[in-house]
Length: 150
Image (tube, rainbow, N blue to C red; front, top):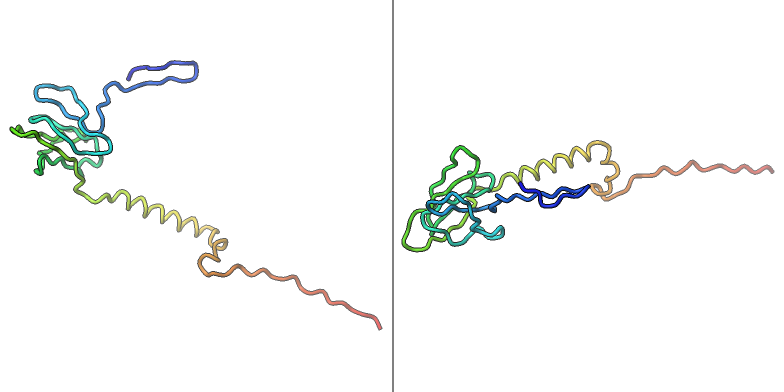
């Protein structure tokens, strides 16, 4: 982290080692360079390079190189490393999701349960018209009888 701006009320830092979500090292080098944009996880690769993908959950993603899966290792971290085989033709890689994203469904289910709890703690009578199509009855005051003397 490097300090970019320092004022009385604000400190701004920048991460000089940030390499993007997907990066690669060239053969014989340890410096990571970004290879794909954040909107498209496909593009050209260097033959014999190692690709690092910071996507979670790591086990749900795979790298395909020219249509074939690249071998994956983790080197005792959560970040997967993919080894691109040395080829004579320029390789093209794509990060693909091989698992259904259950996290979104779990979040939706949790929100639904919270909605049911919210309705169960006294708000259901206010939304009665939503479920039955009619409003609550309001009791009219009792009529006052008038007496006349004859």
